[in-house]
Amino acid sequence: MPVYNKLVRDLIPQVIESTGKHFSTRILNNEEYIKELKNKSFEELEEYIKADNDKDAIEELADLLEIIHTLAECHGASFEKVEEVRQKKVEKRGGFKEKIFLIEVEDE
Image 1 (tube, rainbow, N blue to C red):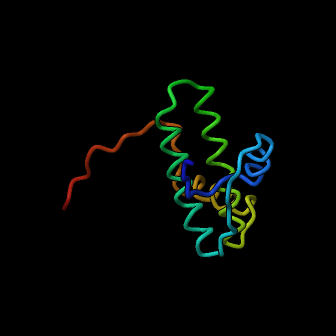
Image 2 (cartoon, rainbow, N blue to C red):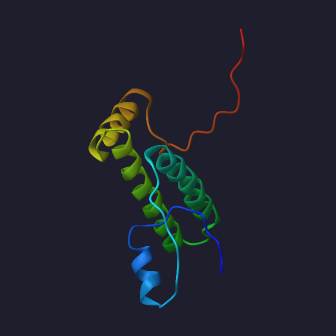
């Protein structure tokens, strides 16, 4: 039997159960939950980086966005609050749309 030891989406146990397979799960405490969400974010980011077409890239970005929504809640904020902070940073420092690649800055 394969061992996964990773955070999965809420409906995955029902999906597995519908196949007639046996499985085991446990509920994480809050500290473990945040740690595993962070691990999951790296997993999904790696899948995004490896995506070789727009459709797969969008799928992985959606997974990352779900993790961001969940982590925001874990940190006592709504996604709207995260978006508000993001927008303020864009207003203050800009976004990444201009494709600017900094090469060096002269030390004085």
